[in-house]
Amino acid sequence: MILQPNTRRARGLAAMSPERRREIASMGGRTSQARGTAHQWTAEEASAAGKKGSARYALKKLRRVDPLSDLHPQ
Image 1 (cartoon, rainbow, N blue to C red):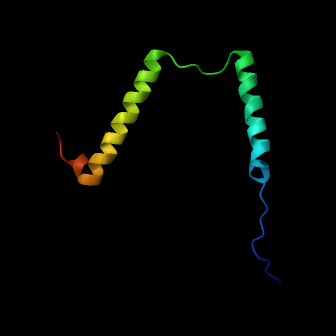
Image 2 (cartoon, rainbow, N blue to C red):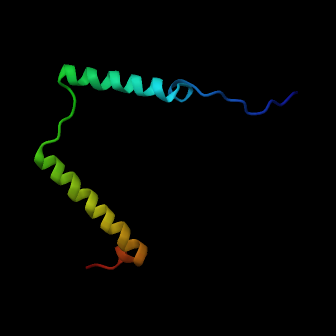
């Protein structure tokens, strides 16, 4: 029995050049814009996303200072 080294080759997008991947992504973006299915943020959605991100950042920062912070009720 001959054991061969793990010689897996890249497949799909991993095997493509960055330029080709960018080209494919661009086609998808243009298509969704043309079909009207591209996501567009409302002011409320953008605000909610910003608040959510800020809250996660603050929690991460707090955990760096006090790793048991989620065990201490405030």
